[in-house]
Length: 213
View 1 (cartoon, rainbow, N blue to C red):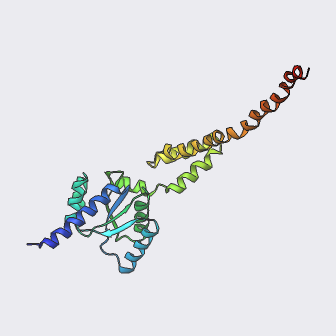
View 2 (view 1 turned 180 degrees about the horizontal axis):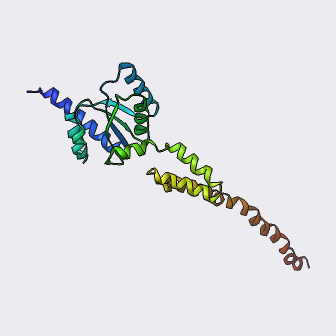
View 3 (view 1 turned 90 degrees about the horizontal axis):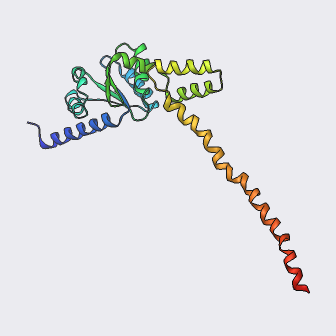
């Protein structure tokens, strides 16, 4: 029977995995069996550079954590060697780095994944991996804003086809210029307010003439 210390350690691991499942915007589970130490190190470095957290997990503990957050669809894939790659702020990074690495390393197998609190299929993971990252998306949209309307339409349609909602990217960019005139308006009005004050002084002079008599 496991000691109290071992049980407590397992509880902490489950709690940590549960928090990762909840906090991460996306994640990918992989079977890393067959990778050499050199290949594994290279993969870890690429994921670290992309801001993705990667670690080997125990299936029994991951299953408990997955159940806590409603990821019951992960249960069938939680067997054999399993590693988890998650990102807290980039929906695309885990799938993109893993998929790109798997192209040249067929021993790395994608098991499943999740996005914005929902488990997604392998096809959806592949589509996510083919989606440009956030910086590229912003550059694409901003570049198209100064181009003909037809090019902007094609760019937005390409994002939609890749499962990306461009509204959240276009909206901040469209709102930013609108704030500038509002802030500059008081500066332009300042000289207009000074003019009446200068004209008021001559108007008082005739009132002093009767006092002189």
